[in-house]
Image (cartoon, rainbow, N blue to C red):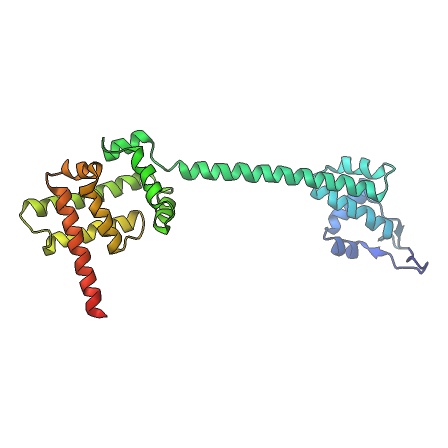
Length: 267
C-alpha cells in the first residue's frame, strides 16, 4: 500500500476500517465471508488488513447499501469492469430517484395531513343540523370577503380547521345558553345597559374569543351592528325571541361603552 509518491502506507486493521467508515466489525467479517469485500492482506497471525483499493470498494458498498441495493446486486456492480466515474454516476442517479420518491412521499403526506385537518370540519348537513336552516355557505364567503386579510380571520380559520364535531356541538351549546340568557334578561324587563344584560353581552364576546378569534370591544360593537342591519343576522336572533336582535346589539354596545369608560378612568 503506497502513497502517490510511492511511499508505503500502513494497511488498516478491521477495527480501524470499521471506525473510519462507520460500519461494524461484524459487518466487515460478513462481507469477507460472502466475498463482497475480501481484505487484500493479512498479518502473520491471520488478522485482516485493508489496503486503499479495499477501502475504495468498501466506500462504494456503503453508498449502495444506503441506497437500498441488496448485497448480491452490489457484488455484481462492483465486479463489473467499471471506472469510478461510472459508479458515481450510477449512485447519483439512484440518489436523484430516491429524492423524487421522497418528494412524492412528502406531497402525499402533506395531502393526507390536509385531508385529516379538513376532515374535522363539519359537512354541510352537519352544519345545518347544528345551526339550523339559517346556515348558509354565503356567510362563510362573505366573512372571507370582509375580513379575509385580517389576523383575526386567519386565527379563526386556524382554530375551526381543527375542531371535531363534538367541539362544534359544545360551541353551539354554549352559544345557545348565552342567547337564552340574553333573551331571558330581555323578557324579564332588564334594560340593555343593566348589569345582567351587560354580563351576558360580555359572555357573548368571550365565547367568540374562546372558539374563534380575539374580539376587541370596537370589533364586538361593529359585529353587533350587523345584527340589526343585516336581515340574515336579524332573523337568527328574532327566531329566538322577537326584539332580541336589537336588544343584543344594545347590550353589546353598552358593554363596550362600559369597558371604554373603565379604560379611560385608568389612564
